Image 1: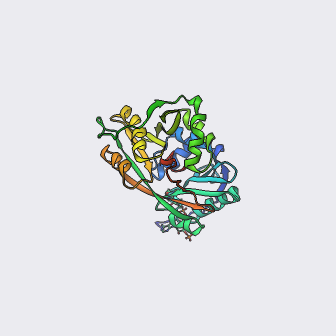
Image 2 (image 1 turned 120 degrees about the vertical axis):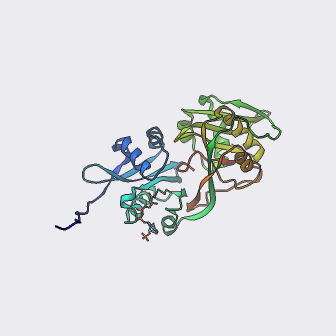
Image 3 (image 1 turned 90 degrees about the vertical axis):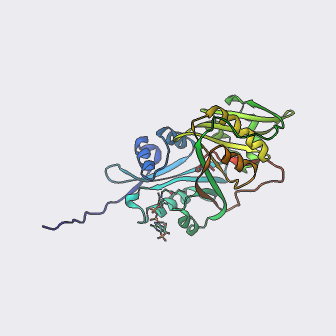
Length: 292
Ligand SMILES: CC(C)(COP(=O)(O)OP(=O)(O)OC[C@H]1O[C@@H](n2cnc3c(N)ncnc32)[C@H](O)[C@@H]1OP(=O)(O)O)[C@@H](O)C(=O)NCCC(=O)NCCS
């Protein structure tokens, strides 16, 4: 008797990401070793739009999401095909679907090494490297630079105090996403006089906690806005995604035990995404790979 059998190939169709059980999305992200919990998928589904590829009996083989920020910009993320069907055209098909739905928007995403050639072939260009730093928050923090200003906690119903600052750093108003993140985040602000010059959020994500977005005008401010959360997380698994390769902020994270676990590449299509003003606010910590 023959010891192998060729099974009939199956067809995958696109469905709205909200039409499938979150546990199927969780299984999909586990298949590529991503840390997202069902709760993280739920938040992302509320923040944006997405499609999944399913077979005839409802099994999920892939996903792709896009997050509109304002009328002319969107970020793309959660582009996954399960290892069983990788390198057969599914990833490119998912991206074609997403690009069609995003229309004429300017786009940005953070590409893994696996996805980088696909995005290059779709016309995305590289802008920066993102360092994914993670580890157990230390019991004792390294020495901090002098604090210039006053740190305080921001209640989630006063987000309007940070929206404009965030928009200057991020390049687009993303108040809707910030409001969603704030539902389950602790928020710190740094004020000099009456002006808010920086803020940071910390929320549960994946294996532990993520500190971000962190918006600050300089490394020293970013250190304080990160340290204020790290102090409360001693011994807990913590992640910070940053584009700072070296300098006071990167050094502080390294000394705090948050080593580089992986890098991804920030890429854009259309208008350039990362535009730092001289002495203006800057994104020191990302909200997440998908949200940039
Ligand atoms: C990245 C990912 C979505 C690509 O999905 P896929 O279904 O393998 O993609 P495709 O088969 O459509 O291939 C797209 C391109 O990727 C490249 N590629 C795919 N598999 C490859 C492999 N094994 N070796 C080299 N290049 C490969 C090719 O350039 C291919 O281009 P082509 O269409 O000209 O041949 C998939 O590998 C994945 O889910 N990886 C883990 C999660 C991840 O990193 N997601 C990206 C987040 S930004």
